[in-house]
Length: 337
Ligand code: ATP
Ligand code: MG
Image (cartoon, rainbow, N blue to C red):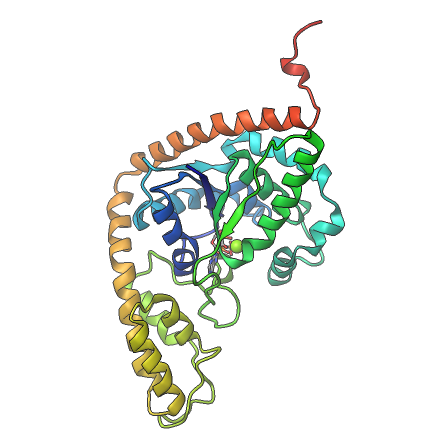
């Protein structure tokens, strides 16, 4: 069985972009992979150092979201990044295998720096987080990484590091990883412009109430040129169609709607009604399961403790493998001559 690793930053509740981008794949893959889900609290601090409480609080929330969408803790180990010191150890070593220029070229990091307004004051940890992510992936020797589009540059950077380690070791000490994209690898936010993101105030959470779902769908922009119902409308770049593409399983009916919309005569209100019905139906059972699970906080605690313990053993072993592959020896554990 191959090893699957994926994860999320505990910066807020998981949203429908996570669901179609990665969670659905993770739920399916856990049945035939050794599966690990990393709640990346240390990475979340790279741009949330002013609010560590938010990050801590959201660890439990992300775990609840996992369980509510169908992650089975007997199949997937859920672990907390900051409780795995081997990840930081490995990241420190990898930092010497990557140039600052290479880090500055990472297109996702560049985008995020712009979106977060960090350009004048980039935390070094933020610039380096792709290296920490390489440490995370390789510490589990993971080969299958279900992610959204924005994470593909991180996988490329990981594999560059893997090749450097293996070259230096003279043996294949670490496997290369493959990013697994879903059909919707970048769901736009309700602002219709940026990627839906927890930190962007443009998300529909998987725990959203019926009223929140309704308001979000109403807020969605369609085609600014579609003024009268009879006007021909544009499907491309229309957020409602982007969401229908992601969530409407009746592809034939959706194709007909697109033809009708392009021709004119289909009201935005009707499109939005169809989308809202789909989203209410998707989210309701997740929200209900989440509420039931939240009544037993010690269960979530135990799941995280157990998953982290399992991950600890594995990542410590890999850290030792990497140290010796790179020709380092550990004074602390060396035998007295
Ligand atoms: P933040 O805004 O704090 O960065 P986020 O919403 O981008 O939060 P992450 O925790 O950074 O979420 O990403 C977790 C996983 O979800 C990654 O694999 C990422 O590619 C995927 N993902 C995030 N947003 C989307 C989206 N809008 N569409 C598809 N996949 C997504
Ligand atoms: Mg993100």
